[in-house]
Image (cartoon, rainbow, N blue to C red; front, side, top):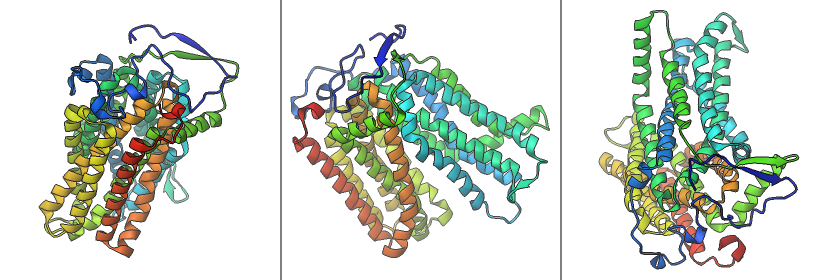
Length: 486
């Protein structure tokens, strides 16, 4: 397929229902059947031995991937700094002296979480119906506009008083956060669905490794230097005019806008879909996605592995506070250093995987990663007397997590046909958001009742069980029909 070709029109009859158990049909895209995609051979030793270009160079030479990746850099940075922006605005405008800020921040977090649960699957359906490039561009530009209008709206409503004892301006922040999060639910599945359109199957692992490295880097940089960057922006804007107070919003909103403009350079080679009559009902499309995941064991197993992975890290974000309290030489308020260590490990693991991961099957990488994660969790539980050993185990945990998450994400991309990717990634988005929410609520209670070591041992057992089960089913689960798995 030439990505520069004009988009073609493909007519879809609404009387025809998609078969979620059917295999990806051959198309002009440079895609292969699942059994032919590197890393999916029943016997990895029988994989072709022809020389292939490995590592990050093939994806870095791909202009379309560079456009997508550069847009992701600005979008991810804006996402990570957005919460810092909201906290800064609350502290400057609404928080009273000696009043805890946690209640305000909790309300913002709820407003950010609700769209993730409500719209994840729904957004995936529309991503399959719409141009993915248009979704990527529009969601970033709209998020940029929303953030950039916040200073004006706060200025207009500053004399409007309060509603139910909360300032009207704070409702503006809640509404903006809700809309930004809702748009993010459309951006996430579109981003994942585009990668297989512009990257050859044999380079998907490297592309996803580079993406994960970028996400981890933006996470660390965003939370570490987000506040200084926002303060510097305010200082520079005030030098132009002392009455201007929108430097923070300019950084975040401008980053979203730059991401949208960079994504205009992307060429996906998508086919426009023109429906004859009414399009399928949204619920029918969501059901198609559910049935596809149910009947395709490799996709289903990969999704389960990702849910376990995100559950572990969500629990770790809660347990890190208690862990920091127990470790000598570390303050409770410095628990973020432990999370940053996990992010550093994941970035290192992603970089290594991008260069050398193609030598192994995805299931084997996941098994090795699960064993390593379990060992690291046990090490964290046993080494609470040593700060440096705990840091080492946390870095190790992140590194082995990359061996699970990246191959499993690549599996879903390679195994899912183009017309189903939005639905499947929307479902994945929903499942991951739930996986992030439940441990946040349960981990603290479990630690109080059972103790820190018992919780870490339980997480290790969950990880190893998921990895072994995925490896066993993917390697020997031949009871599924040939239609769904071959």
